[in-house]
Amino acid sequence: MNLLLVGATGFVGGHLLRALQQAGHRVIATCREPRGQHWPGVEWRSLDLGLLATDPEGFNFPESIDVLINAAGLLSVDAAELSRVQDRGTRALFDLAARRSVRVLQISALGASTQATCLFLPVKAPPTTTCSH
Image (cartoon, rainbow, N blue to C red):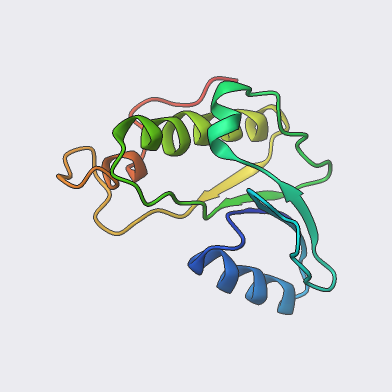
């Protein structure tokens, strides 16, 4: 399977990358700064969800992707930054996937809810509206 793994250098993303590669999948991995990332057989691409939020066409979505796995996360208490990255940036990424009929696997945080009291958790909650096509 051809996979696009977003957030591949994070805790969860790094473990996923290793497991997906060992399972024989073709993985294109992303992180904000892919320089210095050396994983045999993995193609690296730069993707900053914060920048994608302001320029939705700023990421060249790879061809022939079967599934987009979003394991990106931003630990911050800045509500505006969290909204930009975790909400608007993620929605822009999902819109790019939807235009190509790519399935999406969103990995979220335990306790994510729009009613959560910690600033990080509401932005990881499932959206109440669907992405546009």
